[in-house]
Length: 376
Length: 79
Image 1 (cartoon, rainbow over the protein chains, first blue to last red):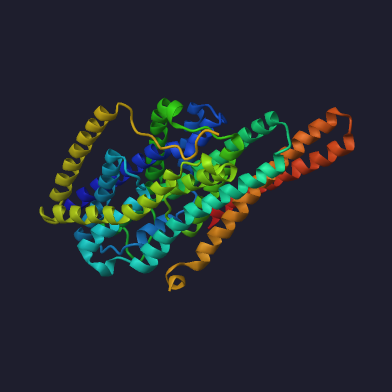
Image 2 (cartoon, chains in turn blue, purple):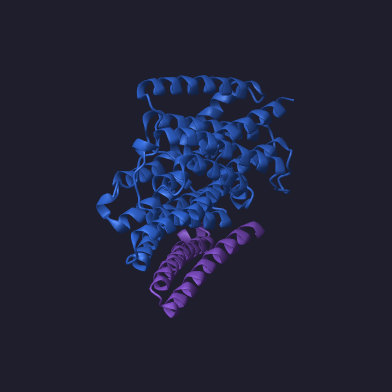
């Protein structure tokens, strides 16, 4: 009975994490479409939410990586507590970075939290540092933003070369139409890669609970549907916040740049999803936006955003791992039953509410993403 | 050392597919736009031969864009 309660808490926590992922990342997905006026904000947000949902169904390679290749979970209560602690570690790090305005990556935080908690719970042998963490997470996470930067830059250079001598009116209209397609693909890609991370974590919990046998890995349909629903709801709800803050926070790009950036981000994320690399979609999209801006005018790029990506890349994994490990130790104070997760969950909710209230009181306006390219 | 840790084949696949699709497909869309705009302009100026050529360029560009997207999604879904 105790383990069933923990599974319910883990699934609920994972879906909340998924919801906040969609909530936080809406800006990345819809910003370019809205800033170039390719789509009205309300339609862009609804469109992104629907395609986030659809995207979650098109592949399970990333979920398999998260569930099988990063850590090894034993089917016992220790494993279940480790998954719970990893999730709490990721959410806590996201909240801390949000509160202090530090750059972060939800994806890296999730994997970092899992690694830290499993390391403390089951020892170093249960963590696949080389092939898993380094080979499937860290190196792809480093390559993806650089690749998106190059692809976005090359795409806009080719596009300017091809359409540069045409009258701007029809070209702008054409690229705005193109952004309906590229923006849709980006939302699809985001849903594919990010929702699958949650699917992977929930599947890990089910393995730890013995619901899924370790030698019969599969992601149950209800896990896919609930993860898809949570991320798309998060995208939709987060979109209303973005619409309110859009006027002052989003830079202007021309529609060709928006099209190139969205296309570059979508292709890199989809290609990585296909081979099972869990990327930071935020970093990848930022890389594409910066690339398309830099190819047009180097001085237009806010290079601090690129610096933030590097900082987030360095900090997130170890810090989330540390918090995940500490959370496991705190949870174990209450034994291996459901009491620990209940106490830690309750304390986390109270702490999150206090942080949110304090931050909202200080800032007045919820923080949005910083613009990567200045108005051209 | 790194090659033994990283799934090099997968990483290279991501790189070449991203470069090909991320640069090629937008470029084809640009060609579709070029063909359409020029075809309309030549049509208005009563130059049907040039208009027809550009219309073909535009149609081919658009066809490649649509085919690439459909192929990409089917590849993802079917694996």
